[in-house]
Length: 512
Ligand SMILES: [Fe+2]
Image 1 (cartoon, rainbow, N blue to C red):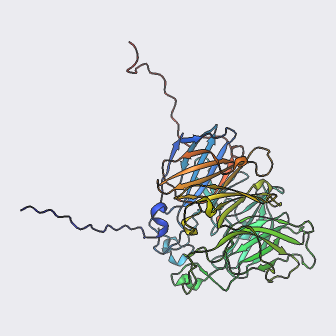
Image 2 (image 1 turned 180 degrees about the vertical axis):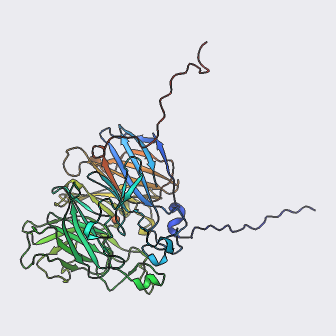
Image 3 (image 1 turned 30 degrees about the vertical axis):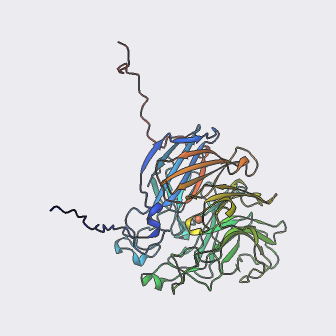
């Protein structure tokens, strides 16, 4: 008698670790390719002429099982808009844990382990891929080829690091740069300088960090640089034991290091030439800044930043394994720093609330960086009444907000259920006033396993005017930036285009 049987399903194992950042919609993408003439719903204004560059962490080899989502090779995408059309190009483990040389294979310990996976900026003629644990890589902006490491040379400074968030001062026309752990692993030396368009270095200073903390972002005013420290701590001993570069410390405060940008910075009463000051806030994580400005009398600074009330990077827990609560609270706030207070003091006042919503990736119209700004764009978990989803931050932010300080009004874009929205990219309308232009963002449609680029006019924020339907899924970007075509040398296609076909006269419908 015949019997039917079904063999038990064999468990097929992969060399890829079962990390949450490598499964589901976080599956590595690793595609190198190009697509032209994508499907567009709506219309892209013809005035939009430039490229949206974004970079994602995208491991090409199975990573160390305990590695963190901040690591992984840098994979750049470029979306070029020209004449209302869009084309796309995607460019590009012996290494162990994030910034732990003791976990790397000995043959690569002397190699540069920066994967340049955090930010992309154009300064003067150089297009840079950046990660704060190393120096820049220069990238060819049309082919996305890697041209070389350390394009500015570090000269006598021998600094080993360069921030992923240098700031362009549009008024002095300088790139303001810092690097922490600049003299090597777990060092507390910070280098600060600016680069002019001819790549001359100005106002170099060395500053000592109160402890070896990550300094991911900063903010500038016309006269001051504010570095923002997170309460993680590096430990060479922990790294030698095979642990992570960073561990969260509930004993450390969120901290600002306030540095005069130049010798000519007018110093408030009580400040000595060459002095910088350290101001502490309570334990929290101030992830990204929108901007900063100074009072007319130069005695106080304002800085706006996202605030997470606990460790937002649970993959770097405390040394004794303490993790943040799952219902992590977050918002967006404005700090006032009173420069008359001595170094090492704690800020007396809580910051003012700007937007009481979980938010991240604040951006402004950077043509006005260093000055008081009116318009703010940021990624948010949209207010509860606008959406049916749950409130868990770690599922991803699902919308954008445009906040106007002068009217204290906020408009929202909600991407819909099962969608995750990435950093807003502002494209100014030529010569227009602050905040007048377009906002572009990448939206992940989880249910469809596909991404879209969404474009909005800031005059009617929240209503897409064009949606570019991408035929594949991308990993989430870390950061992205818009580069107007007029700032790039030459105009080249990102995609290969064949010669136009000639009419052969051999078509089957030709009349003999
Ligand atoms: Fe960042």
